[in-house]
Length: 210
Length: 351
Image (cartoon, each protein chain N blue to C red):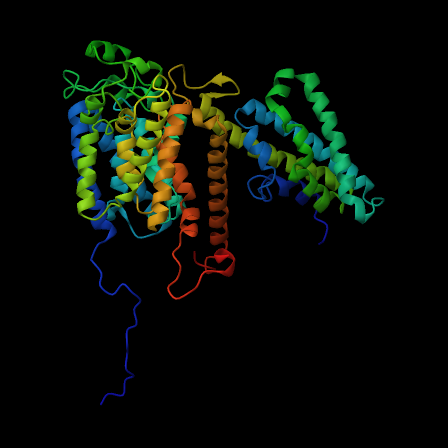
């Protein structure tokens, strides 16, 4: 595969290869940490930091890592940055740290990060890898915000803690509960799949008929 | 004479069929549900009428919209969506706000049926999917009960019925106080905190208690089930298995400790068990087809219902019991397939 251009490395992750809605990776935080916008933002920042830094380091070391042990090395690098994030979040805000529960530590096994290390930064130069990490991170943040926004607006009637509809709003409790996460994710995946299918159909009208 | 090849139609059995379509079955279910619906309107007045209408209309509209969007032939005419809506309405409390009812109807058909591929493909009973969604989304409204036979119930709605969409329903405490009924306990008889003030089984049997719109009158539901049974549109094993296992299990528990556990008659006639056993568990799409499978299915429902009612924190377990049994129906079907005629058992199973 030819190396993608600088622009493509950055832009792909945001929309065309959106990690959550298109690649359907990283479902664990997308379902668990999106019951409010605040949590979604915190989670996005943590993932973006780990993604960019681990992508950069993997890319720097790509010439020296033997192929046979590359996964172990990638995990070691990712785990290092996750530990840094873990302590940093705890230092910045204890309530957010508590709300995130075990999911900061679980960034280690987040498929997005390992897949970017394996599929992109182990084959491309440092700058492209950082751009790819940023793009994927932004894509992930957009997805989490979409999830968190819907779930907080419907489930608590507020956005970032500010009530939107006044005191009389009847919250849909289900959207704060885990089952609401599945409903929201399903709905977003549905919308994205429908959108892409429509786009593909418009591109070649004489093509396959649904 | 003719040079055309001889054409022979080869059909598999059954060769003699009754012209019984989905349409006919669903129409009969609707007819059977009509007395239950009429009694609930009689007991709860205008609110129940609006509730049932909105539930039915929202289900039918969703069905129509889904058929249009997916480009499938319109299936509104087979009455299945209308029956789903009617059943959904009957399981909701009469004071339930109408906008929430509409949400439930859309979820029932959209999420419970259309996403699985339409009638015949749905794993779960659509009406109960909608009910479960509403229970999780609006836990307060779905457990707010008002007394039946209130004066002037045909002239005015229960205040919470007409709540503005997305806003909290008006509290019904004043309405209940104005109704001024001595026997009213403030909650469905199933709220087991008040074991000492449990309703009389005869009242439950005749439908003289508060409760969900169409779940109060056990005798009427039994009669309507009898009609479907006579028309051969109901598998008698399902109600028998559900009600029998609930009766037996709660009877045993009542004998062990009469203070903690209510009597079996109360358990059988209270809450949504009767409606669930006769109209929801018997849904042909979501129940097993073999006789043995049906027994396993129905006894499973009965046991889960008793366990949730007596050991869980929820006041009612019929809905979740049926949904769980729906989930294991494919597995039951695989287990209970009859041996194909002419084949022998496998060597491993005979030893």
